[in-house]
Length: 219
Ligand SMILES: [Zn+2]
Image (tube, rainbow, N blue to C red; front, side, top):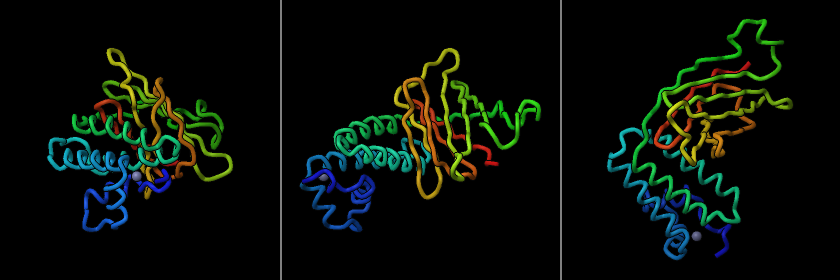
């Protein structure tokens, strides 16, 4: 069966979660496609981990959004989606089973709250924000996109002394109804464009730490 005919991750997850409500062709596909059977098995394990309540910390919506963002990113790279999806899901499932610790982040610098002399001319340039947790400094630069009402976000997560940057970090931006996700580079950098102008909720998944940031609204 052609790759493009594989059901989406959400459909597989839905079929595993509520078999009675899943379309029969999806059920049939999972039964007959080795690749999707592996994905379904992983979905089953993730759901079991979540329902076993061994994981007090990961908020369920974030877990769902993480998985949705993962699957979206992987669908975008269709050529190797199946193998990559399995690899990513296995890694993510392992992390979910170990649980996440919520880490509080404090806003310690905001260029828009600096004195007018330091801000430069209003309405131009970027808004620089720096957040800190016990383990990480998170530097963000928010810029209004020139040709639209959207905003761009460039950021970097830097480990503070005594810590190192965990591999395979993710940044997730919740803007209903979707979640935009991006994997951090090895240097902890990320870049997201076309974000909504209103308040942004940002989630960083860094090893076993989950950092939620509430960004100030635009303009
Ligand atoms: Zn399939």
